Image (cartoon, rainbow, N blue to C red; front, top):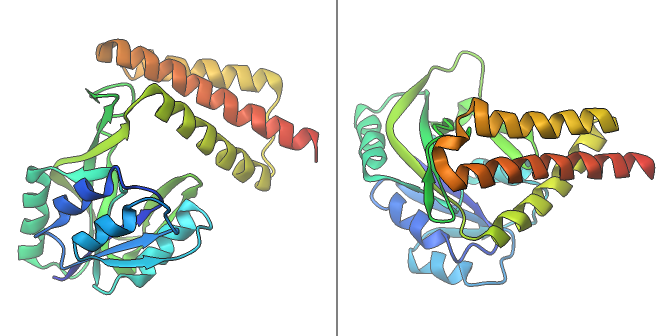
Length: 251
């Protein structure tokens, strides 16, 4: 069973080394598909001896499908640059390789670090992701920027032990920059799909997002971080649909 580790990057010098280090000894090939980074991403990748290729960014889903297409082995393990395998997850993947299945998919729990705190509630955990699969049996889909690896009909998906560590935001400023970036992408995607949102619906969505994160998903158990996540998730919802309404007002 030959395995390609696949990552897309743009200015990920802060994260990519940790990600690549966790793939050493697990993957038979590591491919980084970069969108012409202007920081030290390329140099760091070079120090790990990975395949480093570049391609213009056309969207998260499109970029990940391009990377998937370029992987040379029949199995792929797809990570984001700000993710890394725990030792337990590394061992679980190596056990799969030892069994050498012909096809299949393997999901794993993702544990997110928010400004230095690991989040075990708030709708952020277990946050199960399909990331290891036979290449011919999956495709990236979803709604930009929230991509999702989708199995073809009938593909058996099993669950691996161990966590995929996600180093999401280091500071409050990081979070708000990401909210601004993702909100614009999501609003344009919804606009292209002819989705509309009334003012009343906007307020309902904002309130529902806060209630879901803080109460239903038990964000209060994450302490101050859980409160901040709930408030900022509600704000992100507000931004997305406010931008969508602005797009329709100028249509």
